[in-house]
Image (cartoon, rainbow, N blue to C red; front, side, top):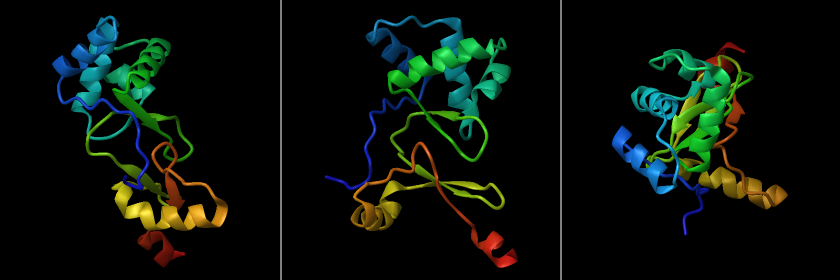
Length: 150
C-alpha cells in the first residue's frame, strides 16, 4: 500500500463525465453545476468560489456557488485547498494526485507529487505519531529565492 495519503476522488476530464457522476448519484445537473464544472475544467489551477462565480457564464451567485461546490466535493468531483491566508481554492479531482508546498515569503504555491514527501511524512510520523497530508493545507516554508534574500 502506498504511503501517500489517499482521498476519494472521482477524476473526470469532460463535462459529460462529470454530469454522468452527478446523475449516478441521483443529483440534478443544474445550470449552476454545469457552469462551475466548465470553469474548473478550463482552469489551470485552483480558484476561489468568488473567481468561479464571476468567471461562470452566466455569472453565478456566490452563496449558491459555495453550496454547489460543497455538493461536488461530497461526490469527489472537486477538492479544495487553503494556500496562504486567503479563501479556500477549488479544483477538479484528478488522477494526477498532488499535495502543495507554499512559500510564506513570496506566496508561490507548488503542486508536489505526494511520493516526493513520503520521507518527510515518515519522519513527522515517527516524531509525533501523526501522518501528515499536505493536500488540504500546504507544507509551508521559504523557497530558495526568499531564503537567499533573507
